[in-house]
Image 1 (cartoon, helix red, strand yellow):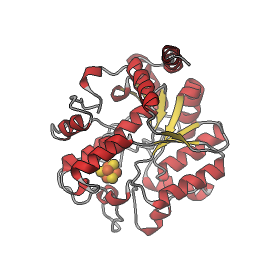
Image 2 (cartoon, rainbow, N blue to C red; image 1 turned 60 degrees about the vertical axis):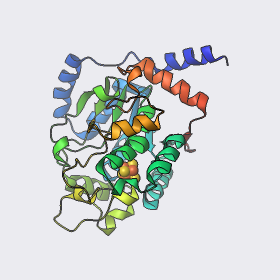
Image 3 (cartoon, protein in one colour; image 1 turned 135 degrees about the horizontal axis):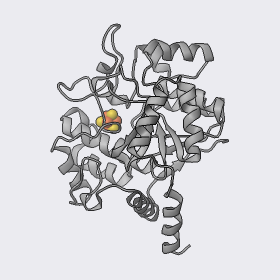
Image 4 (cartoon, protein in one colour; image 1 turned 90 degrees about the vertical axis):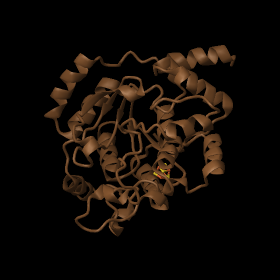
Length: 311
Ligand code: SF4
């Protein structure tokens, strides 16, 4: 296919007319607030169809959402960001979910060139040395692949809950996601508590990450997550060596420190980047930017994997 045709095809594919404006989103958020999580998912699947995707790191909440969504639409899209540093137990639960629900989990990996440059400059365990280096690693391994994963999505579903951390206390079940080009972000479990998640898992036999049986309360990358003592804040097991830094990676809220952004720009070849992790010359974010990135990535042979499995 000629490059021009390819770009046209991809641009058309990602040009969804289903986006909401702020007024519609506000009204929908009020409507969804009173709905149970399965109803929210049913509404979203009906409203957004194939432009809806569940983003899961295969923590307990993500597994609950997949179980609920698969009952409504067994072909629902599910994707994950494989940072390359996750514990083996996470890969095992991905396999169990795939087998249980027959879902083809789409796997998005970081740009290997950026990972290689980052490791050469700062070492493979850079995150322990400095908050900005930790955020740099999260940008390269999580935030940037997420942006690729969301290309073409009109809406994405997350397992965020309001009681997880201060930065999440005000999330709505439906929001306009300005960090990702104005698409819709849904959090059907926003008003759930931890015990409701586990009650659902037990009642429905939902596969879950075995690390929860070993004292983990939240699970991210292996070197940055550890078990916590009973009664401790669950997110204290994330980046436990840091003090005063947000227990966030940047996937769900833009983080600006003035520090890691310069280093990221250096990895990208000297271009400045904004808080969205993209070169500032390409801002503001919009769907054509996503499409252009996708074409560029595909032409460069950037790793984008789709795990095999029935859908
Ligand atoms: S959680 Fe740790 S290993 Fe994973 S992307 Fe962030 S800094 Fe890197």
